[in-house]
Image (tube, rainbow, N blue to C red; front, side, top):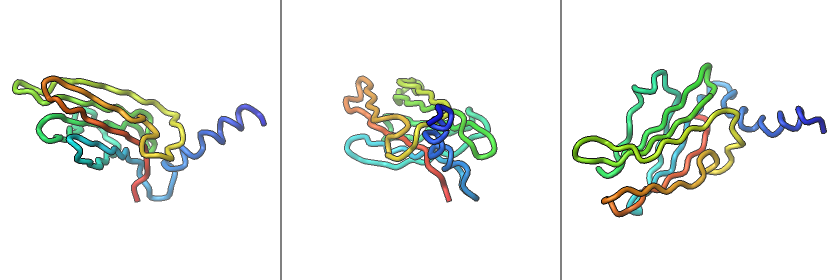
Length: 134
C-alpha cells in the first residue's frame, strides 16, 4: 500500500469525529482525586485565557484548552495546578498537536497521568481523549 494512503487510513478515524454532521469536538477527561472519579468535558475555546479551571476538592485545579477552527481541533493544552493560599501553582502543562491518533479509549490522547503536589499528600489521576458532542 502506498505510504500516503496508509497514513490517510491511519489518521482518518481521528479526523472523522470532527467532521460529523452537527457534531462538535470535545475533550473528555476522567479525573480522580481521593478515589472520587469525575468526568470533565471541554469544548473549543476562542481565547485560552477565558477557559476556566475546574476546582478539584480545593486541592487541585484542572484546565483544558482546545484551539482550532471550523470544528476541527488543532491543539490541546492541559494544565494542572495545586491550590495554595497565595495563588494556584502550576504543576503540569501538556501540549498535544494535530494530527491525533485514533481516539478509541478513554486515555487515547494523554495516556494515564498522575500528578503529585506537596503537602497535599494524595495524587491527582487523569486520562483524556477527544470525542464528539451531539
